[in-house]
Length: 248
Image 1 (cartoon, rainbow, N blue to C red):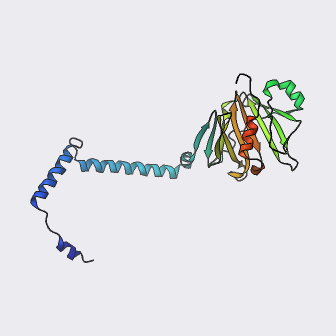
Image 2 (image 1 turned 180 degrees about the vertical axis):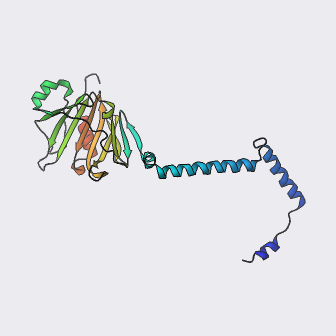
Image 3 (image 1 turned 120 degrees about the horizontal axis):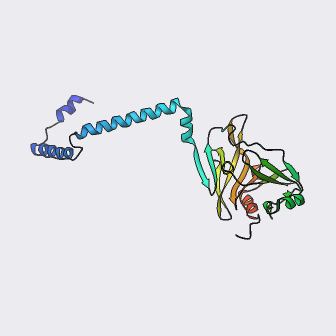
């Protein structure tokens, strides 16, 4: 395009229009910060925002831990909380477990009393085993028991309950986009799909499915290794078949 042609097409505005425009601009500047022209204030704000953005970018580049923290999300489901992250947590959350005591169902019920609660329902084909493991968690100063159900094809379900639950028992570090909120007894609970791979230092979403919830001062974990072995609805139904105290 010929710039000289466009330059020649320009015409001066009428004098009345120029005076009116100047008056409006002058009044607008008078309403800005006293003693500081509006265009100067705008330029300073723009420079400040640019400087802050530059610092933020440099911080993300130099400090990977800061960048990682921005990707982390903490979510609460009743008293159970999860930290969703794309970074392998290492040994965080590991506890020292003494050699478990293995009891029959009858002996466990006699020893544990009301602390041993057994669901009255399980998905088709899963049979409760006459074997209860009682673990002492030294670091948490708490105890959890483990019940197991088996199917003839080798698939298993585990129910673990811990009391008294410490804060570390209520917080779980999981991979991003692995949590689904559900309801147990009308209370918020969470289903987690996946597990940390210690060798690859990454989250494997296709293995393991766990239902976490808290009830009457006990933290429960219902787990299956193979996700298609049961449905989420079946896990919830099994959880809700646990007996509750008569005070409820």
